[in-house]
Length: 246
Image: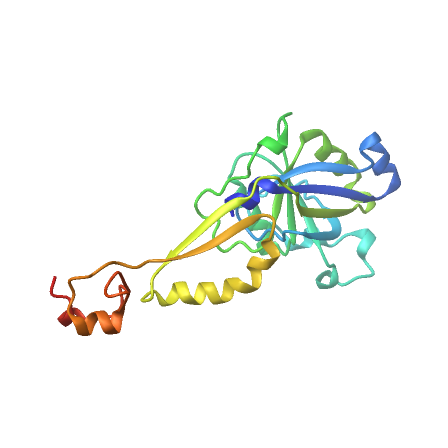
């Protein structure tokens, strides 16, 4: 996870209305963002949906009313059929985790937190306060001025695309995985990880390392059953201590 956080890019793209896109000038509706280090981040994917903002609960520190996702420009669609519900929340007063959890419980698919001061949001991490486990939706932080533009148009039916891209990098993470023959969970991990490691080619080098120990003085029967090369490489295996008279 730490390696991916350093090489991933998050951004919002305004698809409409055109008047809002023009507010961003040469950026053509593109909004820089930085996402949280908790929740589910759909790397390499995009989420497209409508934005919502509750002026009566702008911070999202208290329970979010699910009716916030019912609006005039989507009255032809039942609430549950709206594919991606993007909730705008203002930063402040409570933790990011608190805001996102309240939004998720109300039915949000993505939370966009608007900064409360002018700064470069790409240098700001939406940190986990220690209670973020279990959150299943992504969230991101955008700049104060960009957020204000979205809030100004929220009642007109704004469509956004949230993109979670992994950028190419010359830096490759070297990962070594140490395990032994008596670690069943490690063996399960290697078997399951095989379907993913190929997709990470170019980003990581993955080297499994098998832990052994030397026991040239162990009894012959133990070395025959548990070792190679006359006791030079032995497996720290099951409880066969009756042969380990060293």
